[in-house]
Image (cartoon, rainbow, N blue to C red; front, top):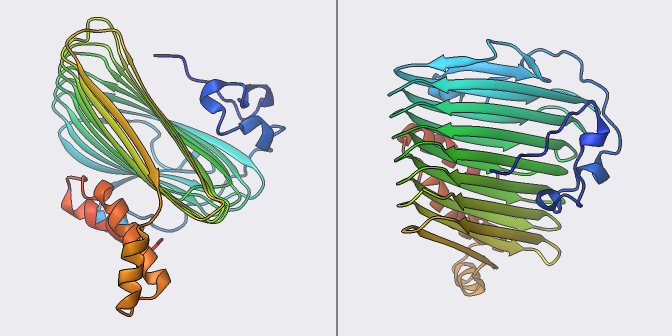
Length: 340
């Protein structure tokens, strides 16, 4: 797997520009010309979007740990990991490592909560999934409209490990959400889904890199998004099948809608295959809302705004419906409905 760009908020020379191929849609150096002042300490406020699910809390506020920073999980556990930004015009970074031991079953409910303005946030997660362990990671990202936000996750999946990820975001002034996953041993199974719903001039860049290092691994990816008004959605997905990773089954799809004359969507799905006897595919579609359906609904007394919201929700709910835990799926579905 290609080495990621290493960003240090205290050093502006580390901010990638469009000259870096993987950052050409999200020019951090142009938006952030100098290192931001450090965010002050702040208290944790609110309960977070997953409060009703009775998860064990983990939290960072303005980059500072409120609870234990790292965690080792055995057996069955539900964790609520909150990255809260309560800053204005300053920057902060947080890093956390979670290990799911052999045969563990972890549901990780992760939220990035923008309670400030014009902040710069850089949050990193390192997630190790041991043999035969299962991790479900649900990520809700709701940054301030004028924020710059970077969220990174490095996931290592061992033999027989199972990983389920769903990322949902409403974007920011400049936002990048990157997941790098390594199938480091035989027979690992991953599903990595994403959803973006953008309004105003918000921007998001959902980037995934999946590296199949051993045989018989499976990856399934579905990302769907809607860009309205002058917003911009970006999807960059790369699947690499290394030599010796025979029997890999890897599939990626990105489907998006543009709902605004000045909205933009960029997509770059890639497959790089060095092995034999593999099944790999990728697809990408960008379209508009069904005008016939909009006309039909309005003819029956539904307002144009309500019709657009209903069609958008139906389009995006395919991602939500793939969440396996019913209680989590209901919370996420309600979160989405309230933001349409």
